[in-house]
Amino acid sequence: MSNIVLITGGIKSGKSNLAEYFAKKEKKVTYVALSENRPNDISWQKRILDHKIRRPKSWKVIETDDLISVLNKNLGFLLIDSIGGFVVKCLNLSDIEWERDSSKLIKKLSSYKSKIIIVGEQAGWGLVSEYKIGNLYADRLGTILKEITKISKDNWLTINGKAIKLDNMFFDFTA
Image (cartoon, rainbow, N blue to C red; front, side):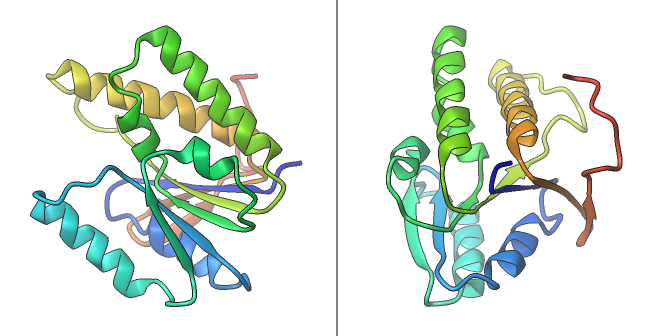
């Protein structure tokens, strides 16, 4: 059994808050802010600031878009927020390269010895994007979340600031 907890939900659903709530119970936390740097995106900078204000100062923070490199190190307990950053970094890859990199990520996550909390966005519950890149993002995100769910010991869904533990609620028809 893995040490992974996956928390998914829509935008502003409370997924990061739940992940931080669980992480505060740990003695030492490495927070992986998984995003490309967007200094000219004021809305994005506000989101980042909101997260920084909530985080305990004792947490080590790694701001990166290279999750595989982080998982190659033994950093102890990780809170990864969010897996969508991995997908964004892979949008320019061919399908074959995406398969390679996403499989590599799943292997790294599966073999990581310490606990990991992963935050993941739920996309695709609404309209289908009129843009190819939007559909590619939603498809790849859905695929990687499904794979992470398979290797997670606990799976949570947040909706409107409430959390539902998904394990044992459903049967797995994808196996």
